[in-house]
Length: 110
Figure 1: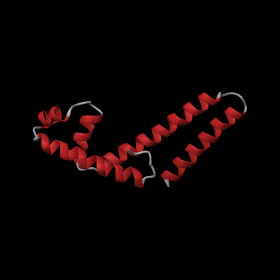
Figure 2: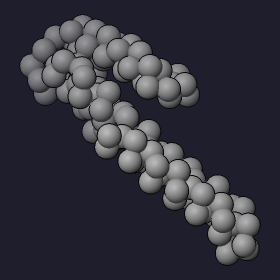
Figure 3: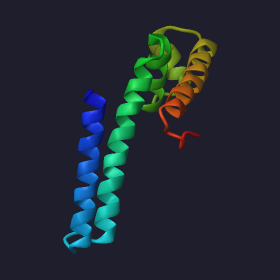
Figure 4: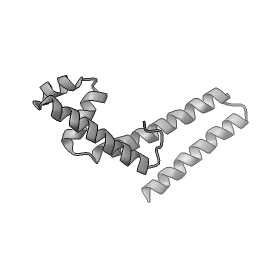
């Protein structure tokens, strides 16, 4: 039920932005920017949800690499695992994230 309410609220907000554009209160660039910001926030939530589905070691390796900017060697040193293990965790975790995000309808995963 909460998902449906969230979708309705999101749709209502998008329609409100479009109405402001039609009435001349927003430029086309402002409309595009606000809609893109809303889409990124939605996709960010889906990314966090997808990450939460990974086993903790895979999630940790991906977060350290992509959010904290550590190299694979730095991750291996930080968590005390062999470099090959870290590489495998990131590769397998990224494959799983892709599957989960594609299933959620985010097809811009590359």
